Amino acid sequence: MATQMTPEELEKRKKALANPTTAKVIKYMARAQVRVFKLTGGRIGSKWRIGAGFRKPVPTLLLEHVGRKSGTRFVTPLLYLVDGRNVVVVASQGGLPKNPQWYPNLVANPDTTVQIRTEKRAVRAHTASPEERAELWPKLVELYADFEVYQQCTDRVIPVVVLEPR
Image (cartoon, rainbow, N blue to C red):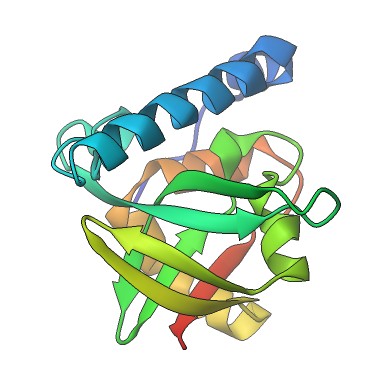
């Protein structure tokens, strides 16, 4: 498990997250990752190797979601955990104060697809209940220790989303 950040480290990270440029950088990096993932059939882009993923790469999928207001189809790369037949993702957005765009889109339109390497799967999303989250969170932190750091950096409870096969 990740260790607690010192108060100084936490303040430094929160200040960086408060910079409007941070969200833009995350957005453009995600777009680039989607392009590379699709071009290579997931050979490149299907493992996250940044932060805690540097020494322990984390599997990445592509999540399709429909804009709840625009109706536009989006694709977002996300780290994921396989839990039985389900796939679990985290709406962390690096610990930013707001949920990522894909999360309210999935709440509004839960039937979607994910792509894991070259395989597309039809799934139905639901936000984990507090009990489900309590069970899944330690597994997610084991998968990617920075999730715990992200939770320390924000006042919101980071949503955990379960994607069940349809």
